[in-house]
Image (cartoon, rainbow, N blue to C red):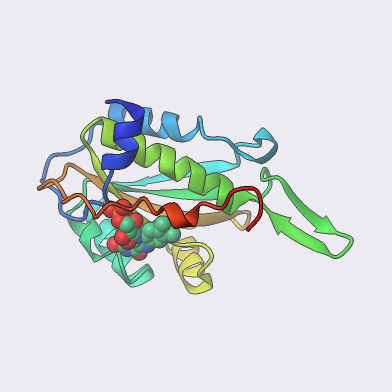
Length: 177
Ligand SMILES: Cc1cc2nc3c(=O)[nH]c(=O)nc-3n(C[C@H](O)[C@H](O)[C@H](O)COP(=O)(O)O)c2cc1C
């Protein structure tokens, strides 16, 4: 699949067939995620793969917009490793790049899945404190691991319709605003 066409035709998929995604395909799409750019090339990501039906079903209790995950082949929770992320906590500055790095990894992962005919949907986690805490507790995440995105994956039951043309020339600002 041509990369540009892949970017334009990826859609959020929320209805899946019962076909399972193979573990080799899961590893290949996670490999694509790990080729994403990251601040200072710290690659501060971890990938928690969930295939168990009960856990997939329970995601809706942890993040309210994930009810369709119960029909999915798997969900991959992309987590930031706060011991590895480019960050600062001194001189009145407190920040880290984990969310941004992991979001870039998420887009790579979803595009790689799309290139294999696998549908995906990004479901938000960070920066919502209740969701972060719920996911961390349920999946037993260590203190330095922040869940950032839940990517629900499966073979699409139908091809989602293409959206209206999203290209808006008035969003482009040249040189000065
Ligand atoms: C940060 C973020 C959080 C999202 N959270 C959810 C979610 O919780 N549940 C869901 O069904 N879709 C979620 N989405 C998917 C968006 O609804 C979807 O990307 C948007 O409607 C555009 O559709 P498209 O992905 O098909 O282009 C999220 C997307 C982003 C980027």
